[in-house]
View 1: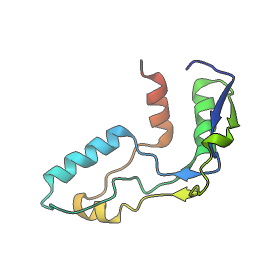
View 2: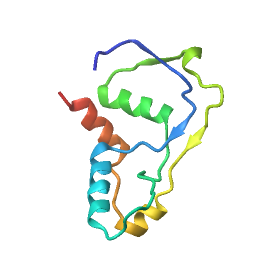
View 3: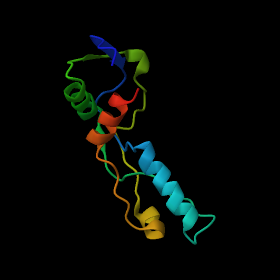
View 4: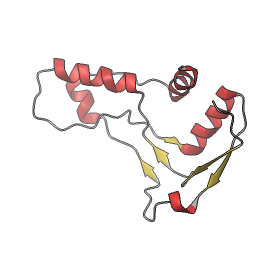
Length: 113
């Protein structure tokens, strides 16, 4: 939003399971309504998105090309390259719940006041 020319990041070559806060809130609501208690579940989409894709999608949404410089201080020594949650147990309790597409989440965040 600030239209900076450059930002600093750690490792851009990672894949993460990003979840929209609206999706997470809907999952919590469904968990409170189901008959299961004292269970541990992953609240996740089960879908991985690379940080490079996030940067590309945000550039498109903002109509602004941004340079993402790698700052060695931000790079973790034992970085996990791919980290995606399993929603199998969650779905068994609450049924299918469609996560928001990452593009929609990014646009919603960008357009927020």
